[in-house]
Length: 492
Image 1 (spheres, rainbow, N blue to C red):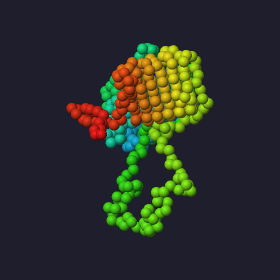
Image 2 (tube, rainbow, N blue to C red):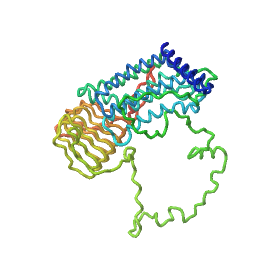
Image 3 (tube, rainbow, N blue to C red):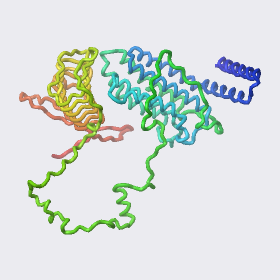
Image 4 (cartoon, rainbow, N blue to C red):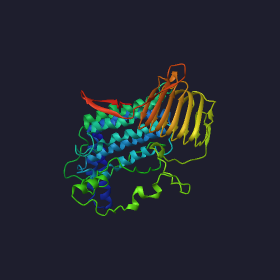
């Protein structure tokens, strides 16, 4: 480290000598020399050195696993590495700047980190890409790096260590999907998922707990304001890597100063009514008087007799569910095998006799944007994913990894063979029929409603017994931890 400082001093002296030889002004030279020394001192901080060692080991292991997989997994991993590099740059900059008074004063300071996280989020948007669970794990996990924005207990976020733990819990759901899907299939994907988890838990958590338990270390009072950060050299790009196009910024940045409306603002809805009543104002002022011809008993169109001459009332708008509100661009219908590995069924409407017959355990099935259709998969496949479909029926025999239902509305699924894992995510209305061989399946649900599972009754009549999966839970704090149990409704 001393050698690096000497080299910086020698370079600064060389610039001074060149300035003297050319007759240029030396007024800017001491400032440049001081900035270089400040940056070097900040970079030589023991915490920054420890950060470099931590990133070199943990991120290096993750990148090595991603290079074996390639494709979008490697692209997402490179964005993660870039985010950790930007996070280090923020820590070095903070040592040279005065601590901001509020998050509003630090928006420009944290913008580079916001931009990188936005790039990762943009990779998960639009049509569901290949290796979606990998990319989603990376995008959700990067919110853990927001710990560098902790400015005190009143800043609106948890302490750094707790924030890292909470952020990883969001990403762990999709990381576990990667482990389940590739557990007995591809060791490279399993290694990648394990490396991602250990990067945050315990890696980043323990690092923050040891070196920055109360947030970044800021410069002394009276230093440069955080709104005018000192320029630093951009991080070098990996050789041969193409720069991705700049993504659209997210609608809500990771670091924001927006707060909930104050009570002093005018109230709306029923709150305004109660406020007006309590204030003693005449709430009936301006109401019209109801005359006799306006009363229901005196109106001819309310006599209860249906007249053929009376026009039919306009049909009420169809009630849409949460999952059915997803919009997607409809394209040409497809039912084809792509690259010998993936069956794609897209934009099928009103087709009740769709079938996939020639399939094997190495292939996957992806069903997207279908409506009022029925698909039968005759054979064993690796996994089946149903995405953004409405009123669709799926009948399949065996899956090796998992069967997934995502962003759907009113689907029916029948498993005639075996399925180790069934996942239902952000879906409204799912009827699931299990065979005797698939009763041991692990069913995971998230942000879903109206899930009913039908199982054989065990009798010879072939009847089904319906079980409704709970969607309401009670969380009780007992013995130092929360105990979660489903809500049970009693009565007929």
